[in-house]
Length: 171
Image (cartoon, rainbow, N blue to C red; front, side, top):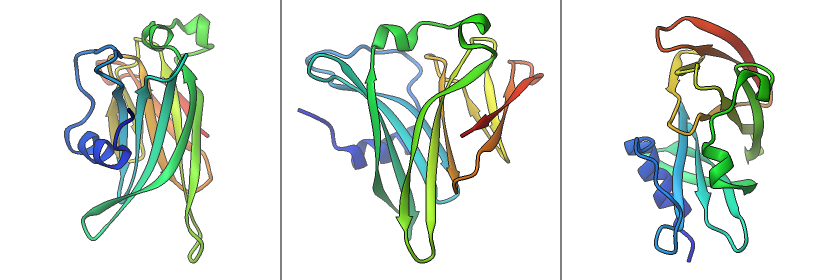
């Protein structure tokens, strides 16, 4: 049994990422991991229990007339234990790195491409700033960043005191 991607994405947008980590089980088949909203575009990320391996799934949504619409997404295999294990600066080659992502063409005329990046950040990073919005780093040290268009956007990595640690281009 899967999950209703649209309903769960809308719920995640409304309430945000849960604070307490949970585990996948026979009863709990998916976990909400991340959300980012930029204007009328959003990305939600879930870990879903699969047959043999867990699946990381990102979903792209847009909002029109107060209603969210799911456009698609994608993902790949991931392991809960590896996902939640804190990484060091040496392990990931800096304070953060892009480890996954994707994009969806949501309209042809006018052409509109919505993309997202999945960032792995070290525990020193408490917040990421993207344009005029900030995203608190969840308990699992991964952040989803949505962007309108195909060009990379700069992501400023901040510590708990708000001190910049570095800049990453979310591709």
